[in-house]
Length: 185
Image 1 (cartoon, rainbow, N blue to C red):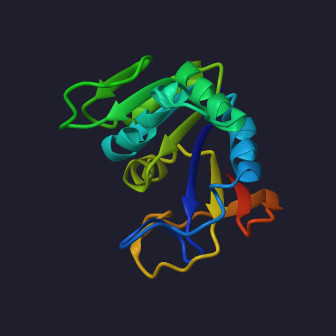
Image 2: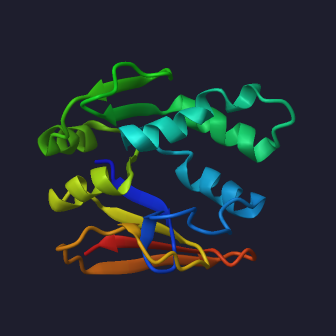
């Protein structure tokens, strides 16, 4: 059975989306990007909400831009190789291969997908992840924590949820970013 992983860059104060501006620095450096590449290369399916999909679809054509460094080209290849499911009531079509639209998030369908998958899945975006967390579907949480406090926005963890997690891996990068991987107990 595959794992469902929720992973995002977060601010030091726990936001996955800042109310104003970005989440700070640290994730854009080659060392971190290469680590993320290696970590998520085995992922077989990405579960996206519309907004995160519209950001990530960049990787469908990133390899066509001139002078891309090798770690960017590798991530583009890895992303293109994976299946993508976009949960949206408004998106009319997709702009990437291996991508389909689902109109509603069905926890039973995701449970079945996990049971039948040969490779892990990720759920990306705090709104979609909140639904997966509420349904008890998330097996691991990967946080990439920047050095910035942003003071508001969308939190990584939804309100009203208690999770008792086990820290299984941590790493600090020269950029100041901290990676922490937790699994459900």
